[in-house]
Each structure stands twice: as C-alpha cells, then as structure tokens.
Amino acid sequence: METTQPRIKTAKLFLFMLLVGLLTAIGGEIKIIPFEDGPFRFGLGSIIFFFALLIRPLPIVSTGLLTAFIVIIGRSLLDLFIHGQNFITYVIEHLPAGAFYTVFALCFKLIPLDELKKQPLILGLWGTAFEIISNMVEHILTAILLVSEQETFISFLLFILVGLLRSFFVVGIYSIITMSEQKKQLKQLMTIHSELYVEALYIQKTMNQIEQLTANSYQLYKKLKPTEKQLATEALHIAQEIHEVKKDHERIYAGLSKITNRNYQSNFLLSDLLSFIVEANENYAKYLNKSISFTLICSDDFKTKRHIALFAILNNLMANAVEAIEKNGFITMSIMIDQDMTTFTVEDNGVGIEGALIPIIFDAGYTSKFNEQGHASTGIGLSHTKTIVENLHGDIRVTSDTSTCFIVQIPTESIRKETH
Image (cartoon, rainbow, N blue to C red; front, side, top):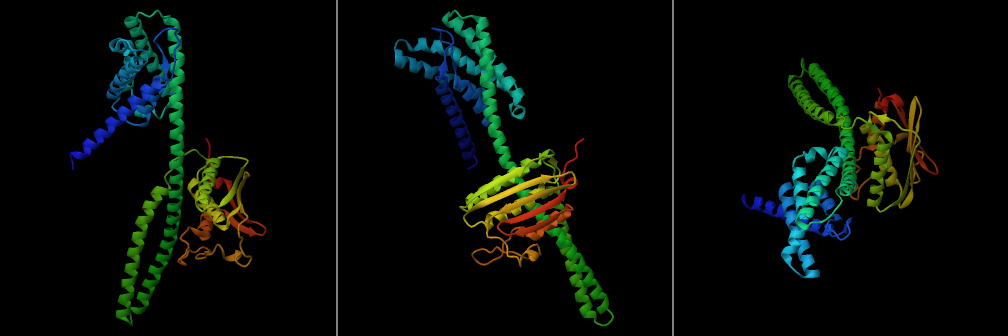
C-alpha cells in the first residue's frame, strides 16, 4: 500500500505532463507565420504551456523536454501525412520549435515561480523576457539548420511584441481566475468568522450568567453552613462545578476571540462587504428556489474596521428577509453615511411582522422559524443581532406595513477605519 500511492501519484503527474505536451502541440498549430515562405511561426502553444506551469506545480524541465519531443514528432508526423516525403527532414525542420520549449522551460526553472504568482506585473515581464530569449534561440537555429534569410532586427521587434502580448495575456487570465477564487474563499471566511463572532458573544454573555450563578451558590453555602452542613456542602460543590464550567467557557472564548479578532484584511471597503452579503443571499434565494430581486444602494464608501460584526448583523437581516419572502419578491439594502451616523436599511416585501410582535422580536428566545420537526431555528437571531449593534453603540428598529424595514444606525466612528 505504501509503495502503491507514490506510483499512482507519479503516474498522474506524468499523465498531466503528457496532456500539457499534447495541448501545447495542438495549440501551436493555431498559428501566425510572420515570414513569408518561412518555417518560423507564432502559435498558442507557449500560452498553453505557460498557463499550465501557473495552475499546477510541475517538474518544469521534464515537462519542457517532453513537450519539445511531442511538438517535434507531432509536427513532423502531420507534415508527413499532408506532404509525404522524408520524415527525418521534417524532424530537422521542427527541431528549433523543440528548442523553444526546452529553453522556455529552463528559463522558468531559474525563477521562484510560486512566489512571483503574487506579483503579476513582474511575472509578466519575466515571461516576456523568456519568450524573447526562446524565440531568439528558435530563430537562430532555424537560420542555421534551414538557411532561412530572415531580418534579425524585425524579428527581434516581433519577439518583443508577441512576448508582451502572450505573457501578459496568460498572467492576466491567471490573475482573474486567482482573484475569483480568492473572493470565493474570502466570502466563506467572512461567513465562518461572523458565525464564530456570534458564538463568542453568546459565550461571553453565558460566562456572566455563570459568574452570577457561582456567586449565588457560594452565598447559599455561607447561609446554610451554620445550620445545614450537609446542604451547605452540596451548595459548595455546586459552586465549584459551576466554576469549572466557567473556566471551560473562558478557554473556548479565548480561542474564538483569537480567530474573530484576526485582521486578515486591513483595507476592507464597506462596498465590498455589502457586495459579498448580497451575493451570498442571492445564492441562498436560489437554493430555496425563490425568485428575488436584490438591490444595493451605497452612494458613499469607506474602509471599515468592524467587517466581521457588520457582516454578522447585515447577513442575518438579509437572510431573514429571504426567508420572509414566499416565492417572489424584492430585497433592498441601502446605506446612508453621515459624518456622525451610518444608517443601514434592509427592506423586503415578505410576509411582514404582526404589530403585536414588533415589541418582542428582539427579546432573547424569540423565534418565528421552525423546521419540519417543529424545532426552533438555530440561527443567530435578532436578539444577538441587537446585542452586536449595541456593542457598536448603535440602535436597531423595525417597521412593518406594506413592506418590512429593519433600520440599523451605528456611529460612523465605531466602524470606520482611521486613515493616516
């Protein structure tokens, strides 16, 4: 079993290298020939090869040599099939193309490719330089082996132009894909962190209650001790047990606080945060098979220092709005930013809230959501939402008439990141 796993891994790696070589060879046939009656060409092969090196770690030199071999043999067989004549002649004709991929791979071996993936501009410039070097080698070998009369200066200018276009095209596509994946991961992190933030808040409140229970139990022990020693001992034991529970809660709270207080993005724009929330709830609506029109109105913007807390508040209000709409409807989230106060409004045309319930919807324990088994919802709830808002020195209220509006007002200084 131990020897089988490395063999399977090696086989998969070789198959991927082979696939890269085949796709590069095929892409090379989609080409432009800049020199009339000349064998020199510009194709998509190097684009495919470069992109493959970026998306998956590969043994670069081995992949380059295998690709060079496939390109030479593939093009030679294609020429033999179309034109006939001598196979060896075609192999010699396509040796410069094989040299291109060999040199191209050797060049990339000289740079820290994984580190440069984070610096698109520098990576694009290195790619351009390697294209020029590889094309020059191919150009020289073509002139030597095939005695082709080509203008070196014009060729060099073409190499620079094509190198820039191909390299930055590859780096641009890779960056777009990477940014899209990073955005997806960031949204997932935001959701997880907001949920942990709420759990930490709940534990903090529970710790205060436990502290009071411990104090009450100890006071009971002191009262019972003079007359009821057995009961007093039991009361003391209960106080000790409660104290142990508190210590466990403190350890959990300390761990959650380290996670939720981690500032994994220091320059978080409010508009980016709100876009994440809207997109997440668009997906939630699709998951529930509901047709909901989402509108985001954000006329101003600033960097926020409380993105986790804001995400927890607004994502909960938006999710509640999605759940309140039966099949079709609209949800609008609007933000008004003043120097002193920032106001967030979440409006929906769902089932609404009865007037008699409005005074109690923020009370602890209140819920209007139950699953098919009749169990109450385990979401963070409006009670926790209100607590988070109050921790930010803000206020939350609701109106429900033709539409339901949750209005959150938070002092701007509580959530705006100071700029220096």
